[in-house]
Image 1 (tube, helix red, strand yellow):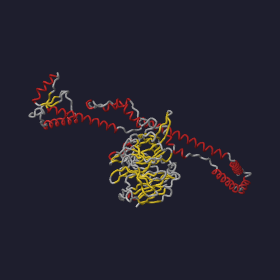
Image 2 (cartoon, rainbow, N blue to C red):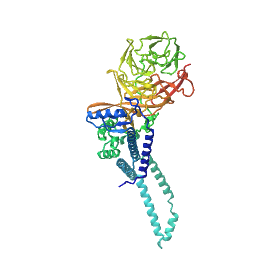
Image 3 (tube, one colour):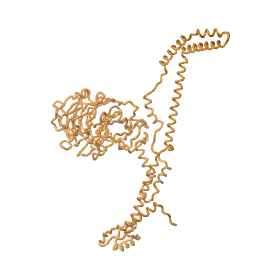
Image 4 (cartoon, helix red, strand yellow):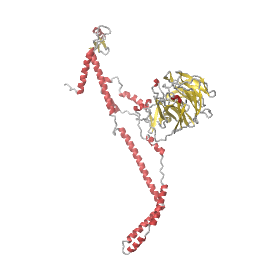
Length: 640
């Protein structure tokens, strides 16, 4: 019984016939490798053979199969080509079917109110709203009862009520007298001579006095504003999103949905059940058990330059706690912010207390561009590395205040530029940078006392133009930078253990008003390069400004190091929060480390030269930013 073809089947059949006709017409002869005068005419389709044959090859090939007790499957070149094309078309059709099924699966994911998850969330919300409404209804009833009780206890009110009752009774008696015949005339006289206005005025005055007293003696309504602002945060204790859960029934449905195409297409693919444990492991790695997961992180945010998916908690007061000792030693005679202008070869010194330009010195030595300037707590100024005469340099200089010149110190192990440099406890640490134009991972430290450099552990990921700061003199934290190729953003936070000499990649968390969540893949959050970074209290690093590609940034965030005990073990979480909480007054990057002095952050900001000011503005103009935890103050300096 012949099957009636649908329109789609007819079209597919026509396409197949057209393809076969086209193949037959377009077959080009291919010369045999063993018999150059002959063309390939046949193909052995035997599984262990699969080779093309010319007429002269046929007899020898048949003999080969006989010797091996196998059978040749000889077919014409035309036939083989048609079959191969048909197989490819079948695979292509299977792929198209799979793609359509995936598209349908995506389109059918629009959740409605019948979804069990939405039902559960709405049920909890209704329960919480009911509890809140019940509490406030009871509170209002109690308030009304207390006000009534307070009024009823007032003796003056009772006295006024008694007087008004007596006056009302007297009016009723007079009205009754006027209805009688004997006393009617006398009642008329009493009413005409009645004067209660004076008494009523006196009562009105007393009532007004009572009202005034009641206003001054109202019941105090105690409102904990700070706790109200934390209400949303507390809700995460009652309901939150957990990890992904695999349901066997749903897995079977998914497996059925993608296994409908022909088996040949998926023969080399692992079954879904085998992938389950691996996928669950990946999910649990990105979203650990001890924190809530946040489904709001979508891949669309990976392209966000401003990390806009991290909303600041607007209910909080815009203030960040700065509680660190001054960077400078108490007896330091040079509490300054140094800046060296590579173009005019001048060293400028800004007073860290008055913010006035204290001194400028012409420098005859050849100091490199794109190096780093480090001032120690004693006020010693070091110029390290950079680019000199178009090449990376390893040279290091120390400023002599008496001679007003730089003297050369021991050179670094590696010549480099655009690196990060930070002072910690009589050592200067140099992190990453560029060598021969490429990002590097090598790190080293300089002993200020012995004037010696020593290699330390390498970064896990090479980077230049990173931001590095100390934390408790025990760790260095490296944020972002630029990775290999000078275009790839290094999106990792790494921590260096000074005592143990190793770098660790930090698993970033995110905190908002709903709780703490894992960020997951690092590329979901954009770390800038040439940002400012500094420890501001016992648990927080403040990161601000920087650059992403060619765009300067004014964003900021707090990087909190949180410690918690679980099963008698102390765990450390690294939590990002307060995004754009207190942004910079203007966008810009930083190539020198900020410091804290008099409980204020002080730093030199590079002015954005993308508005046509020219390359020289990078050197000739800087902004001195001062931050007290609430407000930024900026001053522009012209270093000409």
